[in-house]
Image (cartoon, rainbow, N blue to C red):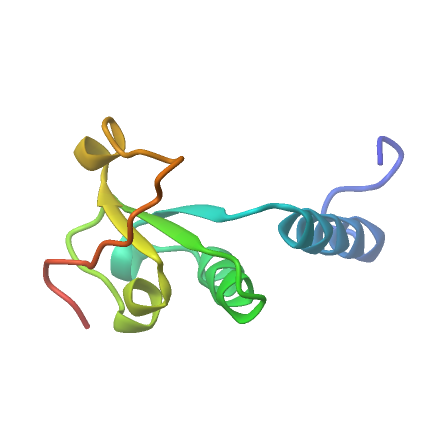
Length: 100
């Protein structure tokens, strides 16, 4: 990877396939979610995780949420909730807030 030019086709394909490989390998996916200001790549990763039956833990740091993201999440937390969340027990939780 060191000899790949950033933003080249080779780099892009490497980054994509490496990301997918690690998402397939993991037990769950944690996403930092900014609502309407979120990155489209993050939204794609959340959908991919949901589509492959990986639990999604969504950390809400924005003022709102797209229903497709929070409804697809197994867990919806704020940064304050994250401090005490039990990742062993992993109880599901719903989003409470402004949505679009």
